[in-house]
Image (tube, rainbow, N blue to C red; front, top):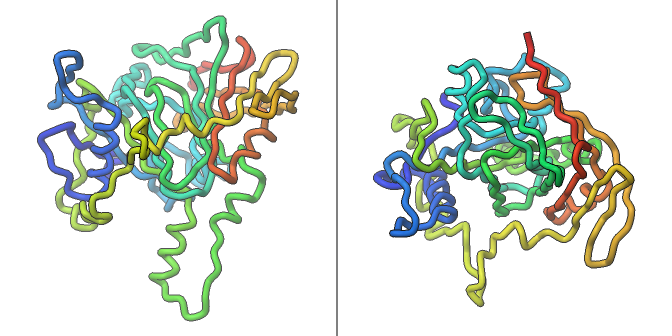
Length: 329
């Protein structure tokens, strides 16, 4: 099976609920065609897929590129740092070409699991080399899962779902459920599905279709949920005063942390205070173990926001985040 699927901006009616949802997300972010805004609908659309953690063996976007039975594999409970891109084109060009979507997005279908972490770090499109940060340093964003919450960001940015931002053992506890006497195997499977980190991921592409990404196979569409699964469901409702979307991630920012070489300061409605920082090291891109990122993290502040599915806005002084660009042999 392909890793991701495509639905064009126009010319194709959604055949299942997920295609309907992908188109809703596309048209929410992309303005209607007009004299002031134009794109080619025939080469624009939504690339979509579902991510499960823990995921069944041998599944997932990078499963074919991962070493087998790696006990430290971050993708078993989260997602390693990577840039969204035309994956197959990158492989055909031996890792050098990075064509990014205009927007990347995450819609959380459960409240469980690791947060999404986005950093304002980019790579050169034609070489894959890491672009130096500017004098203002790096900004970042932590988004904890909350069912129905939608996060979108510039498709060129580095991001991940680092499972070690959670307290030790918390994800395993979240995945547990009580087995009631007499529960059938089907009921157990349903409970297992409800106790996973489940996200619906949509990349928005304008005037470009990623290589070898095609609509969901017609021969298997009958196994998918129907288009009208939830009737006239709309992911992006409107506030009663019509001042904006009810599903607006920015509204949930309550905590900001500024990190400098002299310390980290938490900024909230209650004032400012110094907070402790730990340094975390993560691999970048699951298919290249020789690229790493070292990031000072206000772990306590981040974990405090997890229960309510909130967000943390972060900023680092220049040269505090270290990225290695050594290529493997």
